[in-house]
Image (cartoon, rainbow over all chains, first blue to last red; front, side):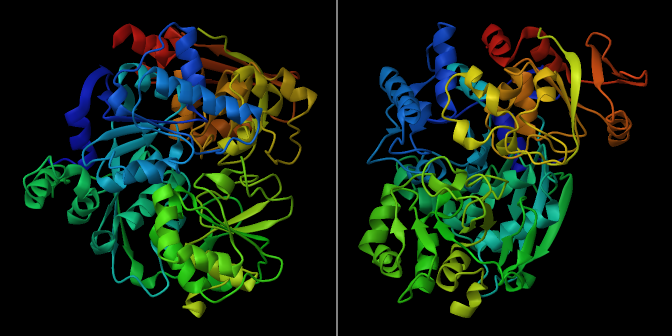
Amino acid sequence: MGKTIVEKIFAAHRRDEPFPGTQVLNLDVVMCHEITTPVAIADLEWRDKDRVFDSTKIKAVIDHVTPSKDTKTAVQAKILRDWARRHQIRDFFDIGENGVCHAIFPEKGFIRPGYTVIMGDSHTCTHGAFGAFAAGVGTTDLEVGILKGVCAFREPKTIRVNLNGTMPFGVYAKDVILSVIRELTVNGATDCVLEFRGEVVDNFDMDERMTLCNMAIEAGATCGICLPDEKTADYLRDFIKDDYDSKAQALTNFKKWWSDDDAVYVKTLNFDVSKFVPVATVEYKPDQVKPLSELTKVRVDQVYIGSCTNGRLSDLHAAARILKGKKLATGVRGIVSPATPKIFDEAMRDGTMAVFRQAGFRVTNPTCGACLGMSNGVLAPGEVCASTTNRNFTGRMGAGGMVHLMSPAAAAAAAICGHLADPREFM
Amino acid sequence: MKPFGGAVVFLDRNDINTDEIIPAKYLTEVKKENLKNYLLEDLQIDGFDPKGEKLARVKVVVTRANFGCGSSREHAPWALEVNDITLVIAESFARIFRQNMFNCGMMAVELPAATIEKIFKLADGDVTCDVDFAGRKLVFKTSDGRSESTGFTTTEFDSALVESGGWVEFADARY
């Protein structure tokens, strides 16, 4: 019987099986941010175990609230900063260098095919785009990961999601994953990994694969995952070129992780993306998805373009193509948060930022920002946001606010219309 | 081992997420105790008052499917813990929340939908839940003398976490 990619990664990292069905894995990367890590640090100090298992395998960033907005968030940042310094964690990113964790860590080349990765953040599933097993965990799992370099998981079950057909004009990776979640529902993949396969995934670049994997958690999945291929190798080129004699050799190495042809899946879902249309969420769950063409009566107060889902350069480009030469509709506030300093700088250099500014958007520093209503961009009760983020939960962007999730192109269309709109009309 | 059992609150909705259990704006707290006043603050269910006197007495939550979905924040189990709620019973849980509960030495117990439905039939009165962990048995009683009892299971790993007090203790002893 063959194995799936995740079963192969589990087998290669198995440290222990303390009880039947529970696998304790060795971790390649433990990632930390300032919201969920400080309590773990405080607990380790309290237990007189303020140690790290391997400072080179720990990556840390201040990203959720940065620059700090008040004393409490300043203290959180300080706890992480002091801890990183104390343990000589070289890969620590503070103001000036920091960006959204799930954008900056891949950009730095920290995630490789076949890796095991945890973080105290549910969108850690993003990194499955590189053919890694990457799971969001709570603070206690994070604490043990920091101290011992291990994490416990149940035996993985894999749902295979075949995405075939031709991507229609105006339909993006975000529309694909929202359409998949609509079918799966918000708990359709609980305790499962979503393995994304098919010609659509093969053709997606790494930004698109990250958007796809990022929202696997919204169907309850432990991780989303793509098979590592030439696109993965090209993205990682600068980081792996010393590890391999040639790209061909890297690809041969990557392919050892590929799911076997006779691997066993708990379920296989087939989608023909040719039938997909631009969509957005309605109500308060990410599986409540409707075509944007049916939602044009929904007025918006704010448009937010950013986050670990859609704050990458290609996302900003998609929005800017629609915004070029246009203005925000009267009464609409536009906020764009490039996800990392590199994306920020490239968007400055190539004129994308000028398009946003001329349209009337405010550009923020790289941060998680409005996505979870912890710092900037919070909605007032009754306000509506067209957002490229990942959660439309009650109160997510501010108590009483309503968030509609959509692609950057659709958010840009909403920005110039003042209401939700099908982006194809502006392309 | 933590104490389990006592007064029950019924949350009659699927997919209650961790933003509803504890909103993100309170994640700036680095002390678990400071979360106490904000438990379930954004949860909107008819007849449920997060600031009410009833929630203050509760030790057990009974709810429907996919409880704890969304953000990985362990602040959700902590907000329950500092309110002395150590047991959540549901049709199903989101993976991270379920693991966080056991990692803290608390319990997230899954029961079949039909059993949950029977327990919900008691919800018109004041209900308490007695927990026999060793016998893996739950008994729900109303003040007017009605009751429901059911067995439950936990995986060997989850049982070990409950008995050892949590994952840090377990892992530290073993790895």
